[in-house]
Amino acid sequence: MFDLFKLCCSEEEEAKRDGIWNDVDGDSEYDPEEMSPQEEDIVTQSKWCKEQRRKQIYCQVKLDSEFKTPIISKSDEEKKFIAGALSDRFIFANLHESQRHMLIDAMEKDTVDKGKVLINQGDTGDYFYILQEGLVSFIKDNETLGSCKRGGSFGELSLLYDCPRAVTCLA
Image (cartoon, rainbow, N blue to C red; front, top):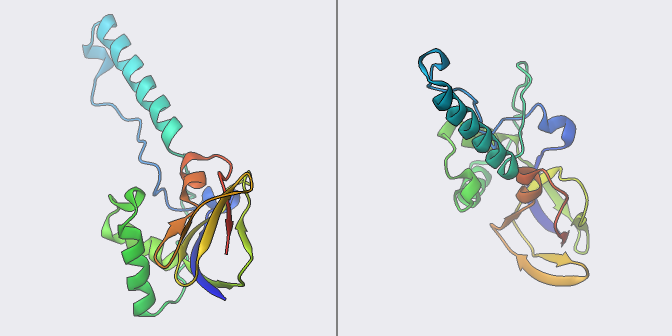
């Protein structure tokens, strides 16, 4: 039996969830009325390039104004474990403390049997995982590429880049 924490980000939930992976505001400090046509073209092109670059990197998540982050009960030890695992991941490095607490609160614990497929290569992303106990192997096209153990996390790339799962993850 393997213990892990998972954060649901299914397509339906993703539209409601915290915009942790998206920081696009689209606002400009420039006043178009005070710019020459050339300056306006430069700003417009710059904004378009910035938007395209961000679209290539981050999945856009829109929140429903009534959305409330789920709070799933955990021991202090479990919260500390999750916080430690998150601190090692670059995508969570710039979270505010309140955002980090919301993320930790929303993670649910699950226990799976050895040999269970957690992620299938090519599927749509729906969960981000942090492994508490056990070993998970990463398999692409029937070739084992690596593995993770306690404190390792996986599944964020599909959510972050809004693309199919790159590997199969086997407990």
